[in-house]
Image (cartoon, rainbow, N blue to C red):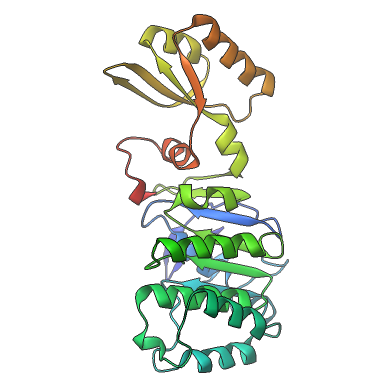
Amino acid sequence: MRAGYGAGAVLEDLDFTLRPDQTHGLIGPNAAGKTTALRAIAGQVRASGLEVFGEKPFDNQSVMDRTILMGIDAPLVDGWSLKKLAAIGAARWPNWDDGILDELTERFELPLKQNYSGLSRGQKSAMGIACAFASGCELVLLDEPYLGLDVDKRREFYDVLEQFRGTRTIVVSTHHVNEIAGRLDTVLLLGKDGATIAGGAEEFANNILELAGPGELVDALVQDLTVLHREEGRLGTQAIVDMRGHSDDDIIALFDAARAQGRVRVKEITLENAVWALQGGGRHDSADL
């Protein structure tokens, strides 16, 4: 897929497939093109090589009737009350469900009589989430939907994701990788250099491994493996290796070899750290994921 604005391309050679009725995480540093990718899928930005529901999505009414994009760059109308926004949503999307909207606005404690302009950042995010799922759209695109939500409301959002998981195709762009990890079926990583890595969330979690111990022993174990990150520390060497593409027997053999040495520890790492390593490592700043 290639997408951009005017003559410039923000995304080039982006290769991915979103399986229906799964929850997909769209992850990458700022300026990697996450919002552009979502807008292209939603039919708001012209893109070549992209199909949604078997059709080119740009300005395609049949695709746009089945798709909704909500998030930081998809604000609602400031001068309208939440009740009016709900009425417009019901007129816009054929499968709109007032029951879902009522449930979610109550869970997020939203003031329905208040104008959208008077809401806090978190309340605006919550209204976007409520509208996204009330729309009844098969494809729900959420661009950093948690912005401004406090800890309790973020947990509520993740509960909502879990509630609708498996009932529609959901794509969430996020920096809070560890918080959402258990709700994702797949992960699509975008790099600033345009590189993309896609795979199942469990595949990343189970096959990106960390080894720690004396340098010469760690190096001996990883010499034939793909090392994503290596650093020396006061207590020894740490290496993160990519075991995707290796068999389960290979992974078991690595654990057995480390156990036989007795001085090297092998463990799985968090999805956030796996993403960090796959995107090049360096200084670990989770806010830039």
